[in-house]
Image 1 (tube, one colour):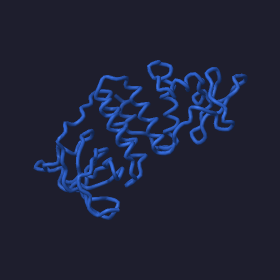
Image 2 (tube, helix red, strand yellow):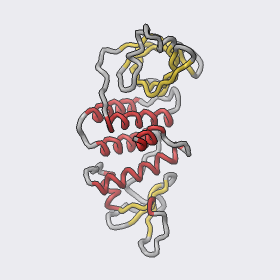
Image 3 (cartoon, one colour):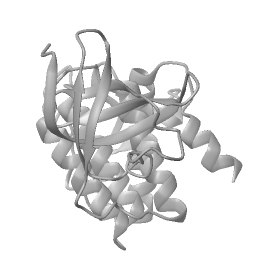
Image 4 (cartoon, helix red, strand yellow):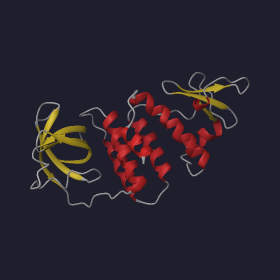
Length: 238
């Protein structure tokens, strides 16, 4: 890992107080993926970087250090931050938390960085919120190597068809299930027609959007482990 990095495009994913006046930050960078760095003195009122080190603000950062935790140097921005409010703000916080939890440090994800930027812009707009989140989650799984195969049954390679019922297993994929005497957990069952609509990203239908949310929650839970998402609990409490 390089000692000194200059002018690296980045976004703050998460920050927390560190020692007396500093911040410990997780960044999503274009060339090095998730990077953790200390911003010394950033909590002082006089800090010139205090207002810049906020989520959803496109930055250029410099940092140094050989260890896991870097030391933040210069921070620049000539771009207006993305402004998110209400549900869209919580959605942005949710996306940041998922990236913090799932991205390995110093692993490049250039396509995902672009998808993240496009998602923030979409959240700032007036598009369908559920569709924006589901599309991001599908792209995230694909970029991390866990893409869901919506085309065929994992055991037989038979195509998924509209009139059949399927069970989803995160580690395997979809399995054809008989509708007769089905004793499977209904949370893991999906109509073939719904899966085809999700594959086509046709999220405008409420039933498709609801099923897509259930499916992606199952898929992400297997990667996130038992620890709940703070952003989801915060949103539910409000």
